[in-house]
Image 1: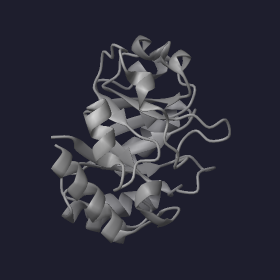
Image 2 (image 1 turned 135 degrees about the vertical axis):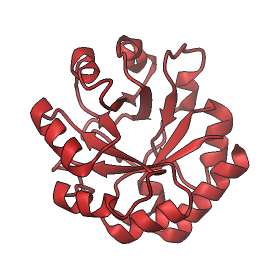
Image 3 (image 1 turned 60 degrees about the vertical axis):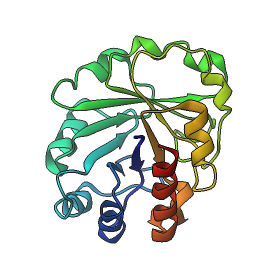
Image 4 (image 1 turned 180 degrees about the vertical axis):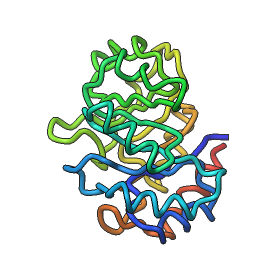
Length: 206
């Protein structure tokens, strides 16, 4: 069964609703330039309301290692997701204390050139946008992933919605799918009905 990660959580209401709908992972963005940035103290308050079955992922972009560890400990994160230009050595240094996701912004086959150099737990494939490290709300060409031998489980991201998620799962067969913009009313504010439709459609595709 394909797992579901809902990213860009900024408030307790959305987090609790998502957990009640059966989400597997929730993502909290600790990149201050993001529209979905959440202060660590607020994220800490949110995760205190979540069941242990829901894994907590922190999203970072080119952050100092000491700051990542500080936030990870304060917020009780399970997973660290790196969305910037982090090196393989940087990402590997957080294991085995945390599960690690390295995100790659996909534009063409060349975008996959260095993927397998990263000894992490998961690879996340998102849409390339020169001005944004993630959260574009845009779909990339899934055919780019065809015939590419991936050494770690894949998390598919980038423009996923309740309407296209079944086609995405059929095409890519990912370990998990990651959605943010596709289940929002406004950046950082989720729509409970869209979250329900998204999760329902993932289950149907599984």
